[in-house]
Image 1 (tube, rainbow, N blue to C red):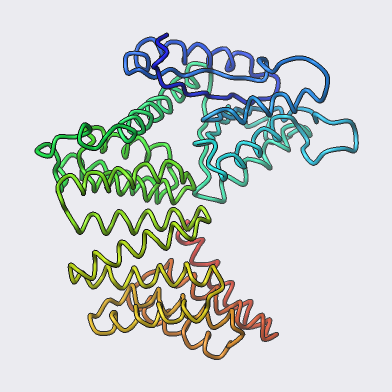
Image 2 (image 1 turned 45 degrees about the horizontal axis):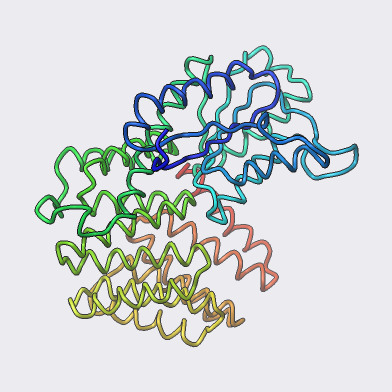
Length: 431
């Protein structure tokens, strides 16, 4: 293998009883390297607990150290949960596989790992009807994925169908690795200006619309496959922007940054100021989610400067709102209030109803944080009124939840319960 190849380490975590799948994991990566990845100067390394070095100390700690060096983790479960890696009565995890999973999630949150994917091997219904203690733990773990749309898993029947799922993920990871390589290269070498198209081709538009539909349905693998296909030419900022927003939504912030930075690069190549503003704004959202408030503020201020120059009032209103959230997160409530009020004024003058509803909600949070519950309630009611008029169910759910917090703080638990139940009903309707 060439030393210049980009290495990607993929860790497999599974309890006993899945030896065939573990072999298939290694086999499919070897095959994919040979036919797809290596010709593109990328190499996937399959990593598992069996490679952990020997020696003194808890063996799980050594496995964990290898896991922390990986870019991706694949968790595979069937009807066994595994055993605790600790002596009886010690440790918080009931199996080594569980410990590896939560460590991988921690790595993803700290942006040292790209993603965790979860596969369940299908279980006979007769066994599910009478589960033993091991299977009960697997089923309880699986319930969490069925509740949360942003937590995705896939099921398979046998090693062959497991290999097919692995190939689909490897294709996405390969596409993303190529985008990272392109982002690392100099902009003037990346894409000739004449090849960049600001408007989407019909086939790209169909891919993105289908991807967004899959994302809303909780079919995250299918969504990502379509987003990856939409950016394959590497020349359209809309495709990269939508993919970046999806990645932010599912918490894959390092990858979202790569997509947003690609949008910025393409916008600068064709000197499109509006796309520059959009890219800076979305970069601000990603940095804020990562907790880097200084960088978030810098990005939102850059977006605001461009939007004001273009007289792009919808963008200006959004920029002020985003800055308000940054300042509120810093506990600078006076500055946060000023930003949200500026945004609301622009919205009122230009009939920007949806942004205005969001700003009333954000302002309500500022007043609630100050302890001004009467003013906070007034803002949440204004937000709710607009969201109801626009039919924005997600916004309505947030408003009802915020109202519930107001009533709970006042001690009106019956009214609080009513609001929370309304919010829950909407969330269940949205799925």
